Length: 179
Image 1 (tube, rainbow, N blue to C red):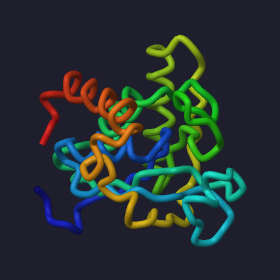
Image 2: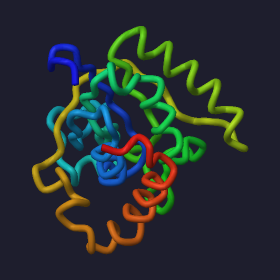
Image 3: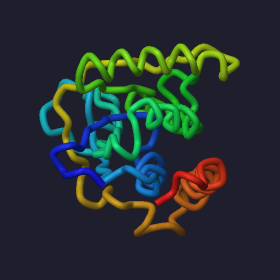
Image 4: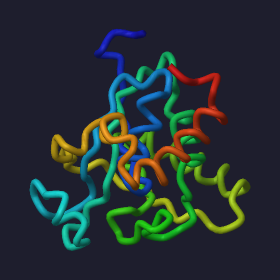
């Protein structure tokens, strides 16, 4: 691994942050994953406030990754295979703007890569991609009980029936990229 100062950050929203967190924690090149909130207008929002849809925030994961091991383009390509980027403000039964598909670009380079990946992914999906690219604004970590949620609660209903199958598909599809 590169030194810590060589690491990069990505902030992605694609439905429930428990799903994204569980997948990205197993991806080689990802140094850390934190669930949180971004893209809203309410300072320091709570989970309950975000779930109400009134804050404008999306549930996101903040990824710190080693670009010598995992490029941003590859990270986004995986992101587009682990959620449905064609459903507006929805992932499965999770509905609302807090579940929108969004990339919070850290800089112009990330925004350009994201635009290119979306163009490439448009050929893969039957419906138009609705993922937005937004400038990275203020990010807020989610409450402590949301961190490492799947690892701590694999038998909880949502985890067993939604997160676990998504994680199993990821492990099968990207077996060569697991930690």
